[in-house]
Image (tube, rainbow, N blue to C red; front, side, top):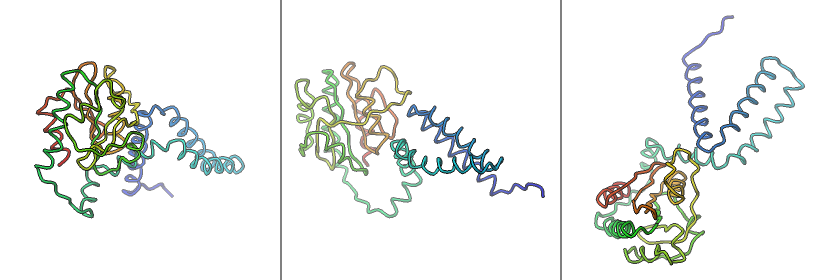
Length: 257
């Protein structure tokens, strides 16, 4: 009986290839590429032994290893799996579907402006004086686990308060400030650091922390460089560098709408 290939088989192969390619990219970004290659080699050997050669004894041993190995892989790659699921859920098409089932809380432009302008003015002032800062704005995904690592503030957003928190002699200036629901929720918070090798070498630890939180959540991260005074923003795992006051205000208004 000749081997027949239908449309369903082609779609199956294409989907598997896309999945493997995406996992390959994810492992490459997290510097786990060698582990991924080793796993793929083991899977191919397992299929060759159990399906093609039909070696019962060796095949049964490898079957047991595979069944236990799935649990081990979940533990070993829990961060990568979390990032994969977040990226899948944050995809633009899926977000449109989820909005159909969510309640739309419309915010007035004046409320957004009251939140945005103190942040913009504080960033410009700190950039001029070369004061380092890292501000994270919470959106749909809760950042309670991040705020728990810092000091609770729950204060009104104001330029003076932001500048005082990031003043060089302040005990909270090294950490990140988290803004949630138009309030400064916490300061001195610890963020996950991105190990993405594509980040320019001249960008420091604050930028890597901003990239890390933007990759693991939908938060907006604003960075003021202590060395250059330049302002950057990280959103959805992408940097927007060297922003002016007008560009920062425009980007925040767009992302917070």
